Length: 401
Ligand code: PLP
Figure 1 (tube, rainbow, N blue to C red):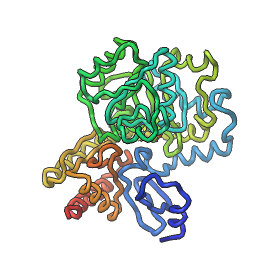
Figure 2: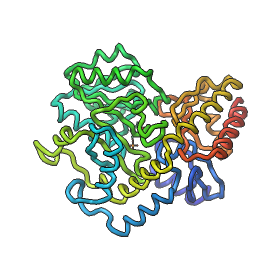
Figure 3: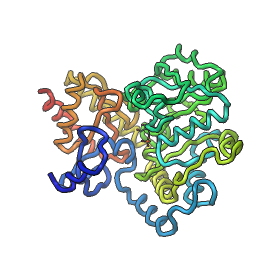
Figure 4: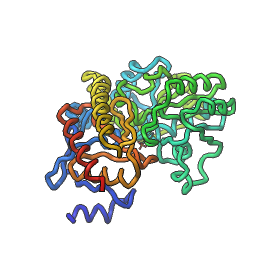
């Protein structure tokens, strides 16, 4: 064991009994390079972060330039900081006109916290609806609306008045009534195992929220910024939420998230009382500069389209593998957010280990231990895709036992 590995074990709080434990030296594009000189092809993008590849040069340049000018200067919302203003304005231009004011956060869970608080204050209502199999983050509020009891139980009591409905069930939407402040959902459930709803589900949910005056929050923390083949996944269904939440890939590798709504809705956070929802570091100027460079890169390289095209090819190749290998139960996904469902959890764990041994990083999803997540950088080259597929093919055989 290297001394750094020993120190990692001793001093860094573990979040699982068996961490992957790669000792990172540097990262670039689709690869992570370790201290022992190995190169790993990253097919999970650091879990949904490296959409533009690791250590993207345009982002590094923007970080350096902003770091030379100023770091943190004031808590959020008081001073005019150009990196914040420029990123907010650029995002507003790209989003539907209803989503034109941005509140920056440090993470996805904080984006959802802000969205839930905003919805309660705006409507004056208390109840919240979420969906079974969802994941919205790990702070108390976001955990309260995360749709798997095993992750909520140890932390109860959590927020009262939360109801979980089955995902993708049109009949269940009748249970959303005029006591509901907000309904929160991912457009595609990521941690739930890449569950894509039927085409009618999200439009029906939008219509039901309109009927009863509930705020619709779409959590695009994992699906945003080109991942599913459109800039935001909501575009697949033409559904516009009242509040959109984003994070993960937004900062190009820096911690950055946001909840986004209309000025009329957002105004409630600055009155009765003023400063109803504040943050010290949200919208850090270095993170916003990185976020703008990342967004510009995504647009210049047309990465949403590239994700759609590469995703089609990758899914087609995986479906071919599935026809030849009965350990694969299903292949599903949109763009480069792909789930590979295997026969059982043990086989899935062996398969993931065999991939890692051969230099390919992928992993299962939090709520579905038979679904392997395949979500490489959107910049993935044809050669990298072929290499990943070769490893997947070999690892499937080697994990047969
Ligand atoms: N929402 C979704 C859909 C996520 O996938 C995640 C993280 O995986 C979060 C929220 C929480 O984001 P963060 O880890 O940045 O707090």
